Length: 170
Image (cartoon, rainbow, N blue to C red):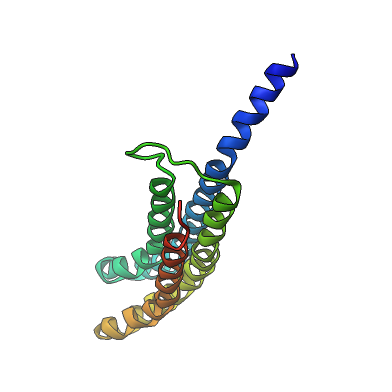
């Protein structure tokens, strides 16, 4: 019985680093995707209100509706980078120590946190921009710029997460 427990504990300790990295990937994709879903829902409410008055505004609102969804894509992209790094997708599994797994987990936190909050904020900005085009459709260019400014911080978080992840040597 002691041999079975020792083998189980040894196997768990060998795989714990990779599992911590995978947990970070799941959190990054989950938080970023959740923020995107909330942000899109906020923008959808504004668009639905506008389209009750003028259904022809759907085409103008569509781009603004899609903008908060990009953070979910960024979270998924960072998660794929992490899964690739530990060799769980399309390659041989790499030996990942617990500390390396914690490092990968930590490198994914900027994308998880920033994308969650920026997607929600971008949804609010998109809702405001949708209301703008409901009254002044000729201002669509300016309306897109407003929520796009929020996107900057999601892109910076993605860049930081990738740089941090690439700095961890396996």
